[in-house]
Image (spheres, rainbow, N blue to C red):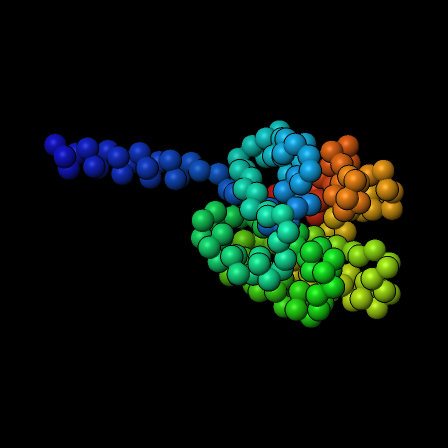
Length: 202
């Protein structure tokens, strides 16, 4: 009797796993964690809503952490991949590296570690780039921006050049800290990401 119950439970678990849809992992920082606004207003939640309409088989896992650097992301990527087993990873880290003036080479190496780990696990990667304000100096801002494009080319990932494209040049698009976008412009961020993501979903 006990053996029969165990067999039934195993069959149900196997059926559940067989019907489980693919996971899309968002791996970023406060810009993807809806910092300063309601979570339901953030671009990741808006992405979930769009996927329910266009690709309902997908589940979104948001592993973004406010304040996260590329180093922190590299240190936890193995465990995160093991937990979620994503089909697609949206990698949107590096803004905190830039804001802290950390070496671009260090950020590039950390992002490369994350990309390689995701690809080795069988995930497709969408790399989302960042840019720094001009007060960080032309050389640093240029090197940071170019690092993303170089990574995407080297590792053959999908690529969005700038998460905040169409937003960053207007003060009214940001909260009082002048760092985090308001709820009003989250749909624009979604559109920026969607351009790179949609081909991976086909």
